[in-house]
Image 1 (cartoon, rainbow, N blue to C red):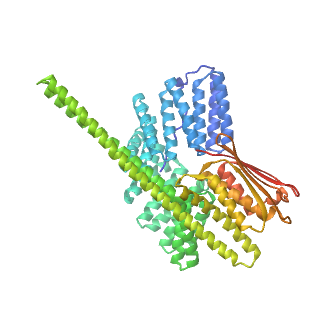
Image 2 (cartoon, rainbow, N blue to C red; image 1 turned 90 degrees about the horizontal axis):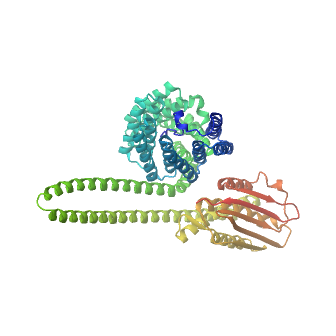
Image 3 (cartoon, rainbow, N blue to C red; image 1 turned 90 degrees about the vertical axis):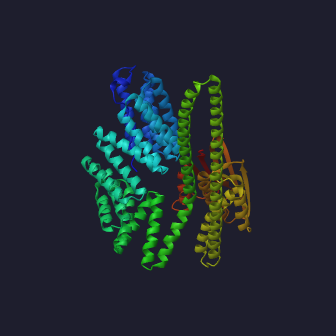
Length: 622
């Protein structure tokens, strides 16, 4: 699916409504353009914000409200690029308020479409559709043809996400008609590709090939390298679905030959993985293995879960066909592990998608029913008015009662269906967490059993470290399953269980652990990396902090110092160690990775003969 970028500043100099002089406003626009360049091209978000802030200060000084509006809109785009969608919605909302105050309809449409896009990135498709429809209405009333095209494209992508293919096609076709009339070739290419995506998802692969080829022709005219790459990959996938693997390989190889393919590793990984499968189907085993392994490596590098799981599945199929059962089992195992981690997300997306479609259908039926009833009411009222006013009043009252009854009944039916969907969702999520907990416990047990059978102390120690990490995961899912809250973890209970377990496993050590933590429930995306960081640090204390001593103390403190901001401190009074001795260790690599995942910062103080202190500052995002 391709999305039209809708973030232009203005189209008519008369819309500027200048209050300051032309030089000042020109400087503001220079700051805004520099911020967009740093954000879109260099991905330097800190510098982009500095330029946007400069635009705000100068606009406030002039004063120039449109400049302030452009600052908020730019801030929203920067937040969206950083996947901070709640902030993006808030900033675009500020821009919308100023656009309404200035009665600038073009900027209103820009803000509405940007808000809708941010909602779509959070899978809140109902809100996305609402704001895109609002943008359409404003565009129609103001005669903004190009703005209407952007709104239709966004609306089509929202409908496609919830698999409402009829509405998606209607929106994409309308956007394409506008692009054709305005001779906007880039928009024509994008909407042709989107129409092809709708056909592909409906398994109409021959039609999809036609639209992808038309989109490719437009991109070749524009010499849009990214568009050409997308078209070739789409054509290759459609050809594979029709089992024309030679043609599919040709398309994938053409996509890989485009100069800019290396700039977007996602496209390169996709092309390699799909090409590998096509070559496997044709019996070209060595090229297939090369493409699949390279595609997997790139997918892991860019953290693309979807491409990674696809590569695992294709490699398992490849090695099974080659009778290399050891490798086939390995990749099948990796596939299942990653698949399990995506089950909850997929269940949530499907449930939300069904809910949105249900609500949209209900609203359409209600509108149609009310329209028909209103028409019939008018006819009946005019006929009966000829007899007596009293009879008309009685019929009108009866009609109103009937409508109220129908609305109440429809609402009750909708509530019952939604309640059933929610119950099914909770049941499925509970089952997923239960299975994950059991599987993790089983894996941890197998690792511990293997560790006990190892005579080599180094190997046994490494297995113990892996066991601790897997057991930490198991405790998290045990907490989820036992509490019945599938979104948040009682972190205090988790830490207590974890400390009890690790103390029991080190019975020979006279180590006292002091826990100072308030009752706090973290979301899963915060609790998991935080738990693994705690595991690495506490395990390290038990293994290394008190060597040559009979015992010691470990203090764990977790406190909130500002709303939603937390400080984790773990310290011991052990032997200490030099700071540079932590480099290139697996434990601190894990700490670095999960600190980055939290968007946090940590400090580490230690020296030989003194206590060791670790502090982590992080934010709990709602």
